[in-house]
Length: 279
Image 1 (tube, rainbow, N blue to C red):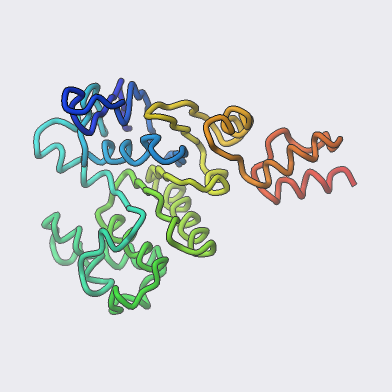
Image 2: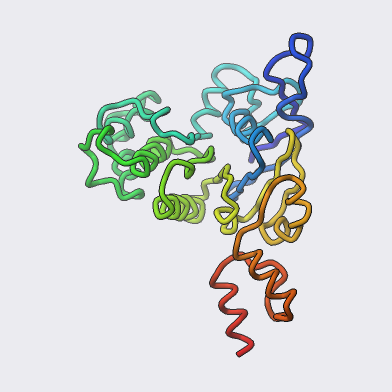
């Protein structure tokens, strides 16, 4: 479990630059195997939060514990946290370091000092799960952005993390590649109990997640299921956020008398079933 207790974070001291904190008074608990989407406009604190969870940054005030380990503790404990918390950034080129797919995926486990046999097993396991076996000897430079993103995730998975943080990983890839990536991480959570935390600007991506956290100006404004969060469409609008198109369509149909449609529709299939039930 990750526990975030009254965390505030400043990128610089208030004495030097009297600006608002990037995060203020954040309190959250994140459990094993949860799938969580974090939404909010630019500057709301989403990326800062995941960097704190990965112990890349440290709280100015408050505390973060990952499986009981404090993120500001000894170097050894911070190293353990960074093994347990893997992060994938928006641009995969920012974290791919080797020339070939197989070497890049092996990079993390090699840095852990694992035996060669275990490294090979982890690399093969990660490539198999993400369908990358055919690309093992391909040069990273030959891959598409979507393929690079899968390699970046495979490199993190080979570290056997308990928590997978995705910082807007679908921004630079096509719709189909994004759907494949999100389906894959949902399967990871289901099959392996890995907690997935996904930052996104795309409202339609969050409907399949168990929990949605809405951030605004460094604070958590909402925290609940997609159905609960998207039921507050007017409040989201005041924050500069939208709701998924299918949710808007369902709401519009209800207003025009289709009362058998749920108040919050999360998928086209759900809308179709609701419409067919009336015929």
